[in-house]
Length: 141
Image (cartoon, rainbow, N blue to C red; front, side):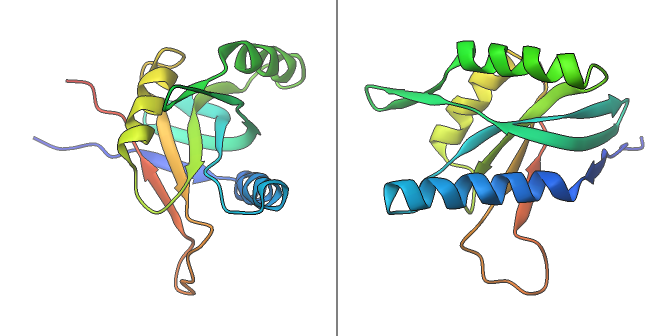
């Protein structure tokens, strides 16, 4: 059988938003910190267009990072008022490779969108050959 792959278009604004979010957090806290945000755009079948993003607030409960759902719901409502044709399609974070903590965040995000995509930007990469981005697609068994 054939395997149909996903086609993703990523607008530069999203990369700028993630970079600004990470840089601002680093300046505020004096050290690099992992940041999280929502990806919004359009999905038609296996074609995804990531058009914009917004920050997600997190709370640390014990040793676990938890997405603040009230903040997410408020931001989604605000975006829907302006961009009614865009939907939540996934989330972003920073780092080199997904961690066990990222998988926990993925599970939380899956409560919002059954099959969220994850975009990871490595702001510490020094590669000149390609953008330091990785994109992960959810699989449902």
